[in-house]
Length: 453
Image 1 (cartoon, one colour):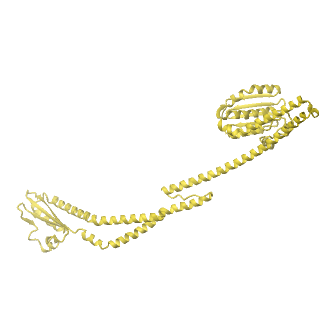
Image 2: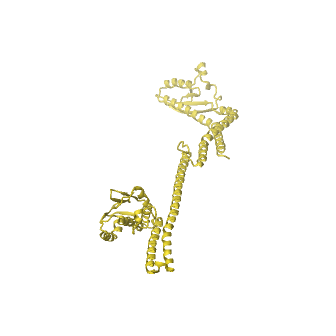
Image 3: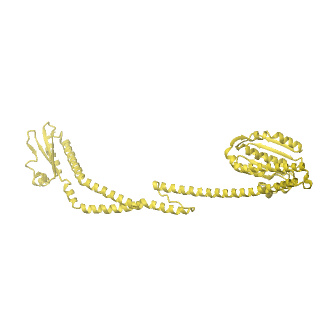
């Protein structure tokens, strides 16, 4: 059974049962309540007359009892003296007065009859007995007459119950049906769909919760799409990285194989095994360094998650300053490090490698006798170095690609592996540090890292 049908049946039955109970209570309780109220009203009138007559003179008592008696057709007052002689009503009562007081003939025409009596004392000290007989019509006859109308009353109750049930069902289930229809539209996962929130009851709370759930679902889908795109991008980068790595390894390996074969067959100058074995060793050392750089670059993400700590950058770099000072003296560089306390949270090993790669590049590509400065302060790390050639912006962007080396560095013996800045980029990106590499003037390049961004 659907919710609307169930609500209709329940509300209709409850309305019918409640209405019948009320009618039954009216039938049985109303006459009792009415009789009690009428009796209480007549008793109040009797007490009022007693209060008024008490303490009056004998003549006033006899005069006023007539007024009080004839003023209430449902109360019959009788006054007796101390010896039991009736003083009111007396034989001198006129026929017209009797007509105004039907109870003088008989109280049997009333459904409820009763009496009260008390003693009234006059001003002169005489005692009188005041008797009040009452009578009134109760609602029994009215209730009996209603019985004949009960079939019509029941039909009216049923009709009203059906109307109330239909209206309530429409009101209570209409919003639920609207929420259900909106929920079906939400299956399309389109933006701008939301349930209408009316009122502050449980149904409106349900609509709000559904809107919130749908909003979070769309946000989660967008995040999943973004993560999927990022994953695909990383997969493409990995594939490209492996392709370039294999290309970088292929040439030296082929070269070394040629040297080894020449030595095996003693071809020409390759008979000098000592010379070419040293060259093979040099090639292997270069490739070993390249492989270590590749491993460092590919293990950045795992290391950041597992070894995150809080450390001081100035303390991390302080131990390397002696070797950099010696290198600066050897190459006639003007080296000025300024290391102030600077705290960072991340992988200490990888951040240290990234910072040293940046400093190494500054020493490797600075012009002879050029200035190299390092500034480390809270939240910022800056390396400036004077170079022979200022790199254009399009060239700077390529420096962070794996195995990329500027044309001028390929001819130098210390041109590098092309992995250093790629490793730096990965480390800084994984830590969420903002960084930039740009020219600050016609002779100086600057690498800046903002750790607090």
